[in-house]
Image 1 (tube, protein in one colour):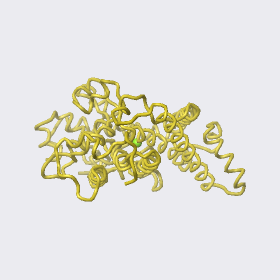
Image 2 (cartoon, rainbow, N blue to C red):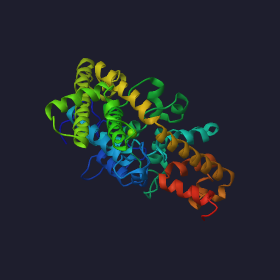
Image 3 (cartoon, rainbow, N blue to C red):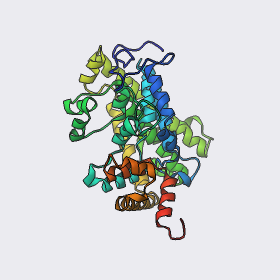
Length: 374
Ligand code: MG
């Protein structure tokens, strides 16, 4: 491993695992976390979960899995350039969406509505619940028994009430402290990945047009550069060359601004990082361009009628499934009926539904509601 900055997370500076384990023989502790995540059941399910476009709408759209890999790739690059722990950044990135429901944000909103009087549903907390409790892979413990800093990075947001239930892991939300720089990197790598791939998928689907995107300065600026440099290329190649440059510009800006903030705050330990303001971030100008791009995507992609139709249908599927299982828990598969013995029926049902892939949830819906199918 290349030299790490003194304020990076390392095996030595880590707060370790909830349950002590012997140190790995050839890997670092955070490589081991990354490997545990890759081998988990929840990770493989990401392949069949919607990012924006429903999985079966086309073979080339992003899924939660390819999104997570793109986030990991950006996060590793930034972490390594800043002499931070890129194994930790990769582990957090690959795990950050494990708790996502089927059908993307529509699914999460619907499940949260169902859980309103039962503690709510939040995909960040669900990701943590999966790695802490729900994965069944080890003889000695539930979950994956990950390092503190990996779990801290997965828990991006948290209400103060919930934070108090989480002990050490929740303390930073109460004390107003920051997570590691590796975790801060993952938040922004997530943003860079989805803003850019949603433009790409939006164009590919025909929901967005190149003319519309002329209103977005980050896109228009790089598209003009591409036209000047390659006047004769067309179609997909022009789009990809433009998006490639947008990602590069965002990563370059993020690195320069973060180097500047780190130099100004001059942390020497991980504890200094926790007490400092956010040290990973975009410049003021790039923050503004990103805000404009996000606003554009919200208006023209996420609220497009074809996307909203999918959203409405997803909502119906989740509400129907939740209602059916809570009304009659005997309809749950036996392993979930067993889990309901130590949890509320609502929480168990939420765990079951959140774990479903898009197509599995539709199949369950048909099995329970279609009179022609059993
Ligand atoms: Mg994400």
